[in-house]
Length: 222
Image (cartoon, rainbow, N blue to C red; front, top):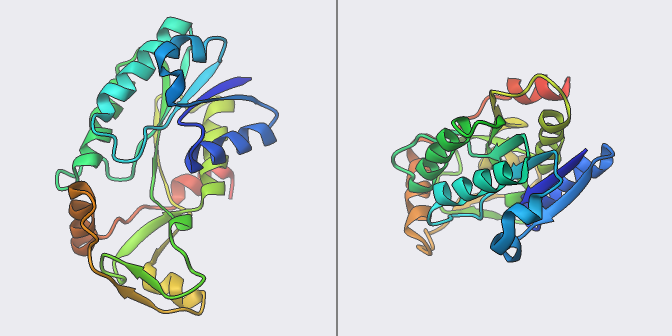
């Protein structure tokens, strides 16, 4: 099977591509340079895995272009990399993913949507952990290797068309993860680099980002 991975050069795309190769699939990483002829870039693929750049200013437009290219190239299957809790009005970039999910569901393609929690790999646990939100807030954390395994499962195996899966490897707080690693965790100031990030940190303060683990365990047969 041949799978085009849109956004295939980032850490998410690399994790998905590596897992696909381990299962004997052929991968085609598609980057920004390929968007001039996106239909040509995905031509011959059996499926497309769609990952938008972080904090994309118009993710629905990005996903609409990806879906249109897939249809034009005759690709029949699409998996969309969304986010846990996409309809969260306090987080603008989550809402962009909620609208994108709707586009995927109405694409006419055989679709599957993955809703990952926060990546464990986003935390550096080699020393004191400092994050700009409450270290005691609850999160569903996802290991990138588990994401890759889940993506491969929905792309290569039958029965996942029309499904939406929340993905988390475990539920914990940053403080708990730091304690397990033998380091401290404390809240730092919001760097204020992007208003969407500031909104996300405020949401995390109030609600965390809980994600159940059952879907992932079921997908991976654990």
